[in-house]
Length: 251
Image (cartoon, rainbow, N blue to C red; front, side):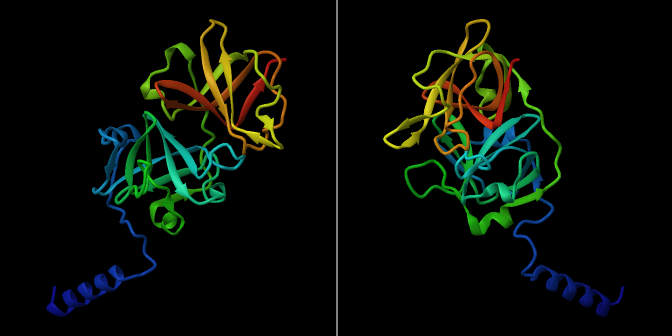
């Protein structure tokens, strides 16, 4: 190969490298599992400096107001909640879409006993929300993903590996509550409300419903039902957050 041809190739590569439309992250990053990424956070926070990425399916977002400025993605090893400083996230990352998250420059934070992914913290929280203007460079979304089914589990068998995972609890009921709706209505507005789920074996699990959810005023089931959602953890206590109004009443 002549010197002139080498020079042309080098010049071409340089021009490509200066393309301002190119993504911030290259295609040669190292993809890891969600479980591995979470294992890096051994303290309250951890800044990711290596070119790591994770890929998974979106199983929870803000479409029905259930998750505020965050999404949850899962792969075969578990799930993770991702803090994003914007609303209407579901327009870019609909439920069941496949998504790749480029993690270099982001941070992991231990929030109430669970590990979240987000931007480097600037205040009291272990992570901040990823800025809206960073969305395109941090996320690659495929709109047509597979319909991911929640994993069936029992309340009595929950462990730390289930935190932020997408599960379904079958044949549960609500114990006596102060409200017949999903959220209490106090002083002219709905408020976040906790219920208690009980399965056939008598095991119980708190259920948290956000006041912002689209079904806040809807009536709760009278009898047994199946419920799909995200396992959360705070203060040494597991609880469930409904995802995509995953309620199936027994007839």
